[in-house]
Image (tube, rainbow, N blue to C red; front, side):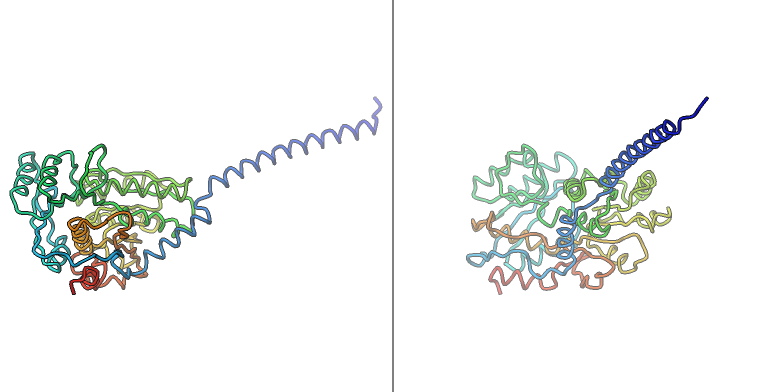
Length: 387
C-alpha cells in the first residue's frame, strides 16, 4: 500500500488542530472555572474596606464628647423623681453608679421597681410604681403590650412614660421610645473590625446568640447583616446558647462549634460574663492561634486579658454603663420638658474598640466597666447648664 505524503500531512494537521481545539476548549473551561473560583474568593470590596477602615479608626480612638450636641433651652427643674421599672429582681450596683451621679447632678431622685419572675410580681411592681409619686416613668426592655394599661393611666395623669427597648412587633406603643439598640450600640462595628483585620478576605464568623436577652439577640442580627453587607461571600454562623450555660457548659459548646467548622477564624460573643472559661477552653483545644475572639463588654476581666496578650481575645467593643446613666437622664429631661428628641436630637452611645495595642488607654473605671469619658459629669453639667 502506497502512502501519500500530502494526505499524511493533512491527517496530522487535522489531529493537531483537533488537539489544539480541544486544548483551547479545555483552557477556556479552566479559565471560566478559575474566574468563578476567583469570584467566590472575593471578600470585601476595596470601597467597602475603605469605609470599614474609617469606622474602625473612629472607634479605636478615645471619645472626645458626650455625643449630644443640642443644649437644653433652660436648666432642668430640680426635685423630680423618676421611677425605673426593670425585668428581674435586682440591678447590679455597678450599673447604677452612672444613674446615681446623673440624678444627683440635676437634683433628682430615682426609685427602682423589679418585675421579678412571676405574673404576680410583675403586677405588684407596676402597682407599686403607680402608687408612688413619680415625675416620670422609665420602663426598661419590657413589651408595652404587657403594661400598656398602666402607661395610658400615667399619660392621662400627665406623667411622661419612656419605653426603653428594642422595637416590639405590633406593640402599638405610643409612649416616648428610647431605643436600647441605636447607633454605636448594635455592635456592628465589630464586623468592620473583622473586615479590616482580615484585610478584606472571605472569612467564616461564628457569633454567640442568647435569644433570652433581647438586646443581644437584636445585636446579633445586626452584626450578621453588617458582615454580609460588607462581604456577601463570607459565612456567618450563629451559635444559640442560654444564659444558664454561662460558667457551665458554654465553653464546651463554643469549642464544639469551632471544631465542627474548621474554616471559622473569628468568634464573637456579647455576653459580658462569657469570659468564664471560654478563652482558656479555646486555647486548650489548640485553637488559640487560629481563632480570634471579639467581645462587647468593656469589663475589667476583658481589660486584663487584652493587656496580658498571648491569648485569642483580639478586640472588645466597650460600652459604658456609667455613660448610660447620664444619657438616660438627658433623655428624660427632654421628654419632661417637651423638648425635641427627634430628628434634630443628635446623639449616640459612647463606645470604643479596645485591642492589645490601645488597651493602655482604657482609663480608670468608676465601675467594673469602662467609664467612657473621664470627665463625663463635667461635660453633662455644661450641656445641662447646671455648673
